[in-house]
Image (cartoon, rainbow, N blue to C red; front, side, top):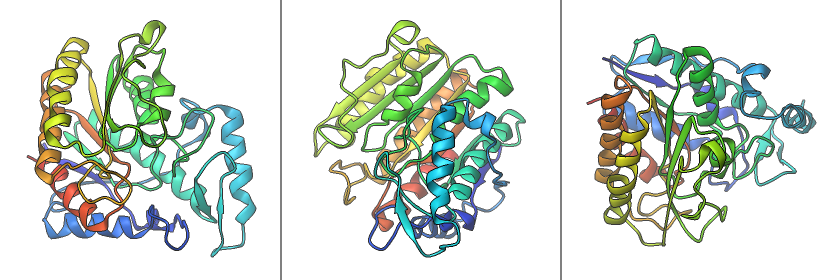
Length: 318
């Protein structure tokens, strides 16, 4: 079955200011890499559309949704201005709200494409990223939590009972963890550098209540690479996922865990990203009819981002 791609130049309209690592050029780097590798050919194209407030409310609180709309409206009529969200380090510009809503809604449409069997796997090259956004707070470059919204959308619209989220960004996905910490219907697995931003994701943080044992954190020191990270995938993720039997696998695909990234100190190679993708697909083929949704998170070396995404999407397309 085909690969689906969510790509649109509108994702460049989220401006972050000169010198900011989460820059519009990231989108160009990704699309050029996919085009050069001929990975756009014959792909199902997902059209972005704005997420509705009731869809955002599957994860985010009503006060937070109102707060975002109020704060970001401050730059209306100032197309070149850049501000910062008062709750954390999230740069925004006049069009950021529209871009973030289109990113979230586009990811939900990619979920729909998988369940309509238009595609088996999907990659969403969206900005801004999402995994640090908690239900009530934007932080770490993230405004809305795209992968958490995707999981809840799959549950509400497509009747999915169990979702697995795999996060290999170098930074811990604290917002995703917070969303599902006591849930039980979503398993969250993360490999991340520690100590590092945002300071969460200890191995003892493993969920509570119905979510007990559904949160799997593998914090690793700076300098860790494929040996350590793939061991966590094989020894912790695979047995837990096979017992959990997810009906959808979602990847928070951060490429700041690749060697040479300016915001991380992991040493993953492009071959490692292909191997991790293969493990996600193995789980999906066994339990989820092959359905894997991948959503771009970090990755701030343009060269490294291009190479890592190419390896990842090529594996998704295999």
